[in-house]
Length: 170
Image 1 (cartoon, rainbow, N blue to C red):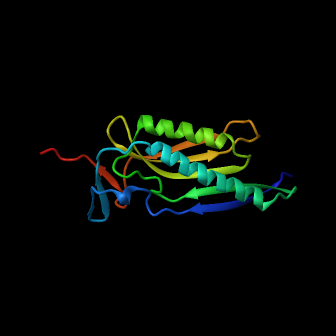
Image 2: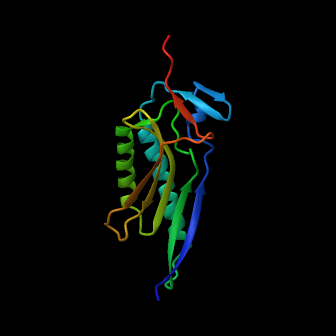
Image 3: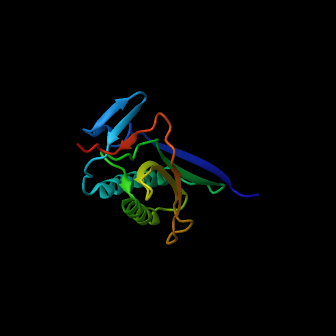
C-alpha cells in the first residue's frame, strides 16, 4: 500500500488584483468594465515578484509542517479568482509567455510537493478576445527536476467577470 497523502492548503486572498485601481473603470449592471488603456511597464516583473514571495511562503510553510515518514505532505497555495488581474489592460500573449517563463524559473527551485494555483490572469488572445487564464503548477518531483505547468483558459466571460473594452475614438 502506498503512502497516505496529506494536503496543507494556503489561501492568499486579494480582492481583485490591480484592476480596481484603474482610473478608467465603470460599473455597468453587474460588471466592472475597464477601458483598455496604456499598459504600465514592468507589470510582468511585479507579478513575478509577487508570485515569488508567495511561493517562498509556501515553501516555508511546507518545511515548517514537518514530515511524517508514513505520509506525503502536499502544500497547495491557492489564489482566488481575479487576483492577478492587471490594472488597465490584459496581458499580451508575449507578456503571458514571459510570465510563465518567470514562474517556471521560480518553481524550479521549490522543494517537491508544492503546488500553486494561480488564478486568474487576463490575456489578450490573437483574435482580440480576452481569456481568463489560470495556471496550476506542481514543483519538481525531485530536486533539480522540472516543474509541471498546466494552463487553463476561459474565453466566455460570466456576468460577474471584469471586462476590458476598447476605448472609443472621438
